Amino acid sequence: MCDQPARFGRRFASQPSGLPETIVEAVVAGNYGWNRIRLVQRIADFGHGLPPVCRLGLATRGNTHLRAEDVEHAVERGINYLNWCGKPDGMSRAVAELGARRRDVVVAVQFQARTAPAAEKEFARILKELGSDHLDIATLYYVESEEEWRQITAPGGVWDVLQRFQQQGALRMIGLTSHQRKLAAGWAQQVVDRGTAGKAAASKPAAGALARPESGPDEAQRYRLDMLMVRYNLAHRGAEREVFPAAVARRMPVVTFTGLRWGALIKPTVHDPKNFRPPLASECYRFCLSNPAVSVALMAPDNREHLEENLRLLDDWRASEPSEAQDLLAHGDRVHQHASEFW
Image (cartoon, rainbow, N blue to C red; front, side):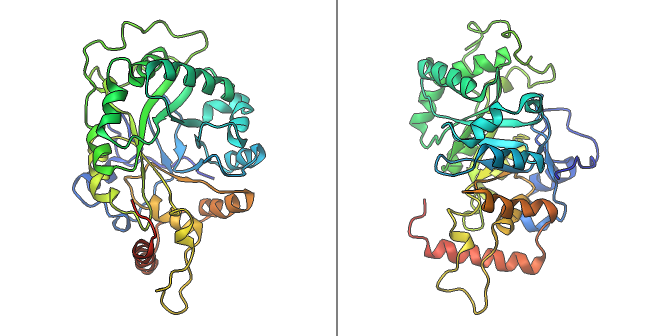
């Protein structure tokens, strides 16, 4: 189980990011290499009134075969960060059936709308499918260019609608998913400043909706992204240089995806040394979670069998040993070298 950890030193007075202060200081100082910190925290705190979450999260992609009972099993094992793809599936059914346990689970959804009218419809559809009166995190789905970002944040874009829902308590956090690491890091530091944009449309929270935490971000912070979701694995390590330092400096949670590089990392390459065994999926996720800048690493198993393999990590929660680390990194480099497509 992902038990609640001991606290290390005082907490930040500002918005928490899920990192103990000692680790944040190490990351800001530049020592954010995943194998340099032996402490592997089990729990992340996203703030915004959300419950603490296990740093190993569960995602669906739209083409997986997880059933509602599989997702419920993961929740029973302690997985309480769920990233839903937005299409009706076993995860959405499981969330709708959580009942009173819903308050202990964080649900993030990949949000595809770019305009205000489309955002209104999509948000209503999501709440209906999940059987809920609120959404924890809406992550703007695959924002890959400055043009898309300008459309999102311009008057009449999706930003104003999500911000209004956030002010009403129907939405806790606004995030962004991107493969463009440098762009994402830049957007994370931007303030969407249009004076009182979105406030005129705000109203009292709907009946039953969550109240916005009084200890939330200050006026400027309300116009910033609350979290990032980026690709990070043994073969894609650029986020260590281009995303993590900026995010940690802002105490911003980072969720990572594609931990297996679409399965390539758990398969051999033509240049593997003799007697080399490709890592298990759980070992690939251990790599991601060993980096203290990662708040949550998402697994996206195809079925119950793969889910059970991934959940092994909960019973052996630790950083990789130095010898293991060297082998893992070398394998990631080989996968990178032989990738048929890398973007």
